[in-house]
Length: 415
Image (cartoon, rainbow, N blue to C red; front, side):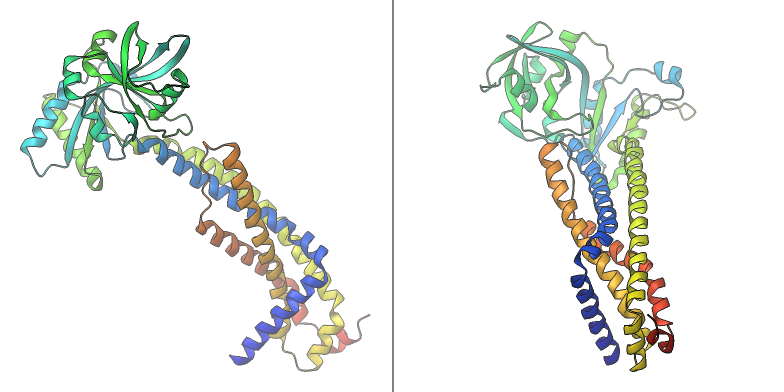
């Protein structure tokens, strides 16, 4: 063990001495590894960034919600079947809440009705089109996780009275009131004046997903009066997030009872969750991963071939040195370790340089495109270093093995 320790330390010393003696050659050799590690790291930050961006976009809506709707989220195969379903009435929210009140052990916590559409909002000369407009009750403030920058959400009294008040998102406030506080000011929706009573804190959006930044909420009674919609809406139900599957089954059974569906009848409603949208984003993440894997593999392969070539050149240049060391008693293992550690050292230095470059590029992208949340984590650093070490072992083993097998007599006579 002591001899092996000595051989390792001596091989490290010789390896770094060779790198210092041939700085330019070592740098050019490590360039392929640097590019590969940058690709590995940026691919990882992009994938983690997609996950973080989706989480950030959904954060304001809560990840412990189930959505009872007429239409399912995602692919629709039998369009006519869903088209002919009965509407989901807002009264179901009250009935679900009554069930929750009489069943303390339920996984359901709170049901809130919601109706939504895109509309135009006007304030003086400012005009915003296609703003996500939500009609709901005062209980919505209890299930959302969006913070309030200023003001408040509308009260239960305002909701029941159907007053013309609204709660607006950060971007809406910034666009309509660029140099002023919107509290107490008036905006026009459906040719009606609405008083702004609150503004949500900035949440941010990602990949076009909804966020509170571009939304307006008003009492459901007010919404139904001006938009003259029918009974159809959706019910957002807050559940025990640790028992999501059980909560979904319980809510499905409860909705079947409320809609008086017999055992032989199919559900005429859908229960959706945010995981459905997350699954639809998986192809994007897989595409980024496949592209990154191809670029990474190509760059690392080119880098490995370059290191293998340079290691073979180094073996040829130092053939007499190898013969001398063997003649003095050096083992094959010692020679193999010397050249293998030299290849690994070049890859390791390239890996550190690649990680440094990737961190710098991540910071630059974060400044240029702050809406894309790149995540540069410690796990990516570990993966990058491990990949660089294995690349060195892969590329350096064959030349090191050939060096360890040299006949000392032949090596000493080499010119």
